[in-house]
Every structure is written in C-alpha cells, then in structure tokens.
Length: 337
Image (cartoon, rainbow, N blue to C red; front, side, top):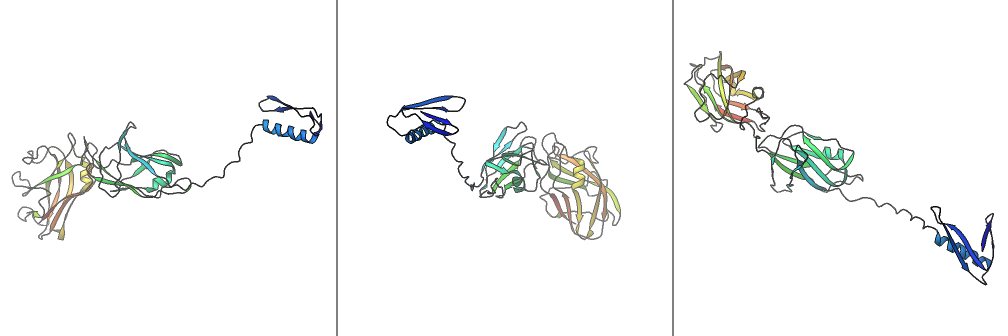
C-alpha cells in the first residue's frame, strides 16, 4: 500500500490501494495485489492507475486558421411596410433583368454569407439616377441589413442600384464582384405626371384663337406676332398645360411653378410666370379629347421682340402630383418663332 507523509511515499508490498479524487467531490478506490514487486514498481503502478483515473486534460487549443474566404451576397429583396418580403430581386449580371412593380414604401434588404462591415456596405451602395439610400439602425458588423430610399423612386423610371465589391468582412476580405439590380417603380396609384399638351391664345384675351400643341410637334410654328403681342411691351396672358396623372390625383401647383421654364434664343420672346391655377380657367372648356387630363393654367407676362428664334417650354424633372408621384425626366415643347 502506498502512504504519503509529507509527500514522501513508503510502501506495503502486498496490496496496493489509493484513494483518488475524481472531481465533483467523488472518491474512487483503486486496488491491486502485486506479490514480489519492488516498492518502486508499486509506486509507478499506483501513479499510472491514478493518472488513468483522473479526468483527461483539455486539448490544447488549435491554432487559429486565418479567414480568407470573401463575403458573398446570399439574397437581395424588397420589404413592404409590414416587414414582409415583397419580392426577391434578380441581379442583372450583364443581362437586362428588370425588377418591376417597386412600390413607394418598399425597403431594400440584403443577406450576406457572413458578418460584414456595415460601414463598407453603406459606402458601396449606389443608385442611378441619383436617389439617397439610408441605412436603418445597424451594428458595426452584421449579415443582414435593411435600407430605404430617402425619397420614393419616380414611377416609370428605371433605376440601377449597385453594390460595389468593396464590401468587407471582419478579416478585411472583400467581395469578388460588383452586383447590379434594375428596379422600376410603378403600378396602382403610382405613375409620374406626364405632359400631353399645351394651349396658348394667339390673340391676348381671345377664347377662340387658340393654338394647341403636343410634345411630338417638334419645332412647330409659334406665331406670336407684333399685331397681337406688341413688341417690347409686357402683356398679360396665359398658357395651359395638360397632364396625364394617376386616377384622382391633381398636380402640385407649387411643384409646377418651381419647374416651369420658358426660354427663347436671341431673346425673341419672354414669358414671366406669375401664378398657377387648377380651376376657374380663363377658357372654361378644355381642349376637345383632353377633358380627362389634369389641367393647369400658368398666368404671366409675355414680352414679344422683333426677332425670331427657337422657343422652349420646359417642365423639369421632379414634378409632383397630389398623390406624391414624381416625374423622373425633364419634359419639354420645342417651337420656332
């Protein structure tokens, strides 16, 4: 038997017994009969049995393997106002894949193969034509991110949203390629105001001598003559614009005033708008066939001059209606005086 006194063993050569703590307060007794064995051999045997009974030592921690795998985008999708997935976006990859029916309140979501630096995603997102893209609250690193446009995409306009390959993970690895999506907004009560026609009095104050144009009438004659509009004198007059809008929507008059411009080469003619009205028109009856269009009358002062030139009537991009839809492109009429 092995007995330890002040860590010095002495031996009884007939029977070997040891009391071993096995953890959690439990005791185990290991014994064995070893006739004719030396004390040293018995000691070695006890030590071996003790070692065998003890819990295994934890493995040495494996050496960390550097992460060299690039992050990958698993999915891009649209979320509706309730947070449900409204559509899965198809990447262009050089093809003309188009994700139509994007609604005004949709948000843009991404799922990555691993946590990525959210700041790198924020700076890698682009939109053309330009639209602001705002990140929803997010940690420094995440594999799932949601974004919203700072203003609704204009209906009917095709936008290209891109994610540059500069997106990086915790180890600094970046994506292998840039990704593009084509998104077109539209449907339901979504559609930009589209200019369809213009009406102008050939003679100031006349309700019968009216000139009617469409945007397709490129370089049509704009007969503003000296006998009707005396040269170099400001004369009060008006012009009407007719727009196609979604059902039930009117134009935003302030938006129209801000985006309306009238210009002529050589200073041939000038028109300074003063107000926009959507009712109580100078000529109550609309153009035949256009009664279902939205009508706006722009009142102002026209100054005629004794020279000719190209005349441009223009409504800039961003024209809004009462439903919040916006045009994405500049619309214009081109005339010759």
